[in-house]
Image 1 (cartoon, rainbow, N blue to C red):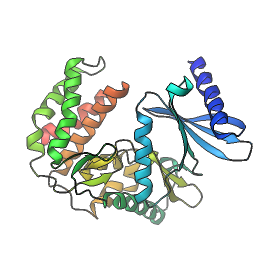
Image 2 (spheres, rainbow, N blue to C red):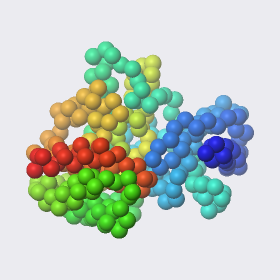
Image 3 (cartoon, one colour):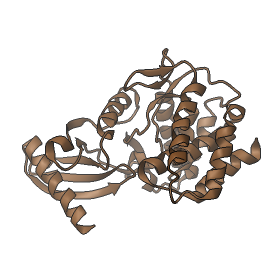
Image 4 (tube, one colour):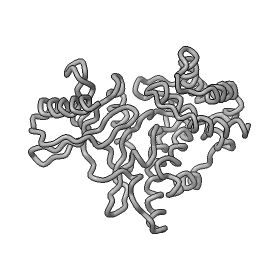
Length: 305
C-alpha cells in the first residue's frame, strides 16, 4: 500500500514536469473517490494545479467532455483543463491536470447563522437549476457519443438492465441476499414506478452533492463545482437524491429545490429507486457495497408501491 502511494506521487510529479515544463515543488494527495485519486501540485512559479489520477481506463475522456459541458452552463467556476496524459503513453495511469479552485469542500463549510444558511442553500440550488434548465431536442442520453432515445423510460430501463444482467452473470460477493431480493423486486416494478412519463430531457450533473462543490470558507459563498460523473440528458429528478448527501439536509437543499420545480407525484419512490440503482452502479464499477443503504432505499420503494 505504501509503495502504491509513493508510486503514484512520484509519477504524478514526473508526468507533470514533462508535460507542463515546470518544476514541481510538492505533490500531496488531498482526496480519493470511487474512481480516482486527487493530488494538489505546487510549482516553482507559485502555481497550484490539480492532478486527477484515474483508477481505471476509460473515464478520463468522459470527464473532460462533462467538465466542458458543465463549464458552459454552471453559475460557478468549473476548472479549466490544462492537459491530459494516458497510461498507454506514460506506462502508469490516465491523469488529468486542471485548474485549482481556491476553496474548500462545500460539505465542510461551517455555517450556523440561519440567514447565511439560506443564502448558501439558494446558491447551491440556483446553480443546479441553471444546469437543469438546459434541455435537448434529441431526447435522453449521452451527449458524449450522441446516443439519444426519445423515451426516458426506455433509456433508463436499458441502463439498469445492463446492471441487472451483470449481477446475474456474476453476483458480487458482498451483495447480500436481502439486497439481491430487493433488486429483483425493484427491477420487476419498473413500469409501476415510471407510470408518469418524463416529458422533457434536462442536463444533469450526475453527482451533485456538497462534496463536489467548492466554497470560500471566509465569505461562505459557493465558488466552484467539480466531478460531473454521470452527466447526461436525463430526468432531472435523477440528480436530486444527491441533495440529501454530504450534509445537504442541513441546508434543506432538496426542499429548496422542490419549492422551485414541480416534481413527479411519486417523487419519493423514484428518488429512492434512483439512489438504489446508483449504488448498484458503483458496486459493479468499483466494488463499493453498502447493504444497509440498499435495504433502506429498496424498502422505501417496496413499502410505498
